[in-house]
Length: 171
Image (cartoon, rainbow, N blue to C red):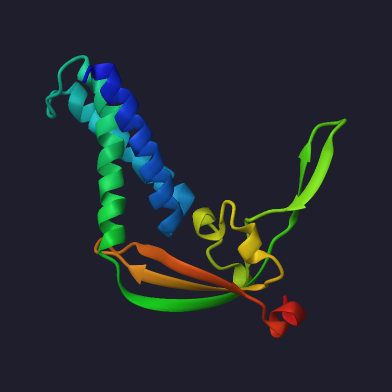
């Protein structure tokens, strides 16, 4: 396997794992980006001062493949060591989104939800469900099952959409 093949295979693997684990881990998106950026800056300075020894051409490989894989391993280990499941129930609503240009305009509901009490306001992935719109259809309450991983991060293990009459009246 050539170095280019490794770049391609590990990059695709990293993207798939990162997206999968990020949507299952409750993270404040802004804090996550800030922390990863600071770690990258610190590691870059340590590499430039030769405190971390990396070959000259391998710096790009480290930051494009090895470092994302380390972050992914952190998230995967946290996910698979989850324990103490707890259920949380929230009323939710999703809004109408508009897509298209000037000549083509379409409206439709999204799979991104807003929880009652503004819960998980900055945990965007916790409130996004990709293509699960059919499961959401006609429902207005969500029951999450969360666990705590070994690194202390909260993990969304399961969720269920139901209809609750009191949510329709109050939210």
